[in-house]
Image 1 (tube, rainbow, N blue to C red):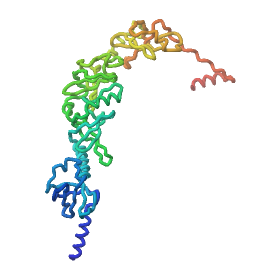
Image 2 (spheres, rainbow, N blue to C red):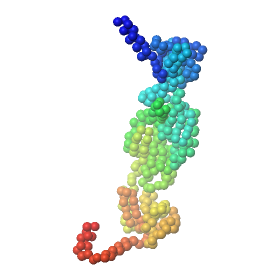
Image 3 (cartoon, rainbow, N blue to C red):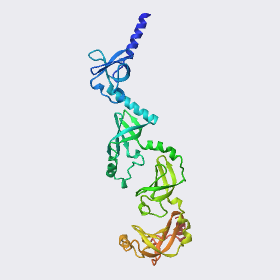
Image 4 (cartoon, helix red, strand yellow):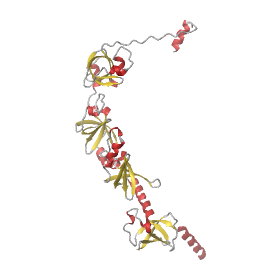
Length: 388
């Protein structure tokens, strides 16, 4: 019976001996001459020496005898019969585990920006280097570059190199060596209480902080900023927000969408839509003086007043057949005034069609009769036409 117990103990002993690659825990027995000896659960003595003492994280910077530590098995047995261990590999794994825990817990950590490229920033946290895409910058640091010019984005991002930054770890995959950070999520969390005070439909007052081809940014409240798309600035069609606004202007806007850090605004929705009353001011068939606001490849944009603009299509600018539209359009100059006849109005679509005064309505050309070799009976022709 006792012999059977000894065999079982022997089996358990060998079953519990760590293998190469295992992460083991133990207590430090001694630190002497660049070698750290560790008792691994009373089963075997392990030693960490040479380059394996390299600190991949802060775990092993101030260790002393009696401390419990983790290490990785790199060799079953050395020339002294001890198991070779590594703090370097274990530290690497531990710091990845810490990053994964940051993802799970949603922790905010401080990291250092090491370098920039056209897509984002290289960031060091603990002993690891990861990446933060441009899209994960907070709104204050996001590069507002016309046309998305990558060279200008790169120049903007280089300003952050060397700075400390508060971020969240949003992806930590040790197997793929993939570590992704976000500054925007920190901003969203800190702004949540402020954002919760607003809802869609609220009117706000703010200041124009930036103008881009696609819209205007408005700062308001406690460090908040929203985007007013170019189509939401005024009821008229404009080519660029700078046609209406300038940086520093104080404006009133309405919140039309809230999506985490993205706040969308409208200036025009706080102003009565002038197109609701267009039929009270103008009538189809009316001839009115209009100013050429813009020359487009397809015709002229005409300003009837400050609020209502219409289109005189190229086909409504002449009686003659147009072989080269550019030649015809070159005869018209922005700012000139001409008389136009209103030929259509669609208030719901914000459309008003115009024809240059004196241009005759084009008659549809009669369809050519198709000659047939065989004459079909009149009744049959009528029936065929009905079927078409």
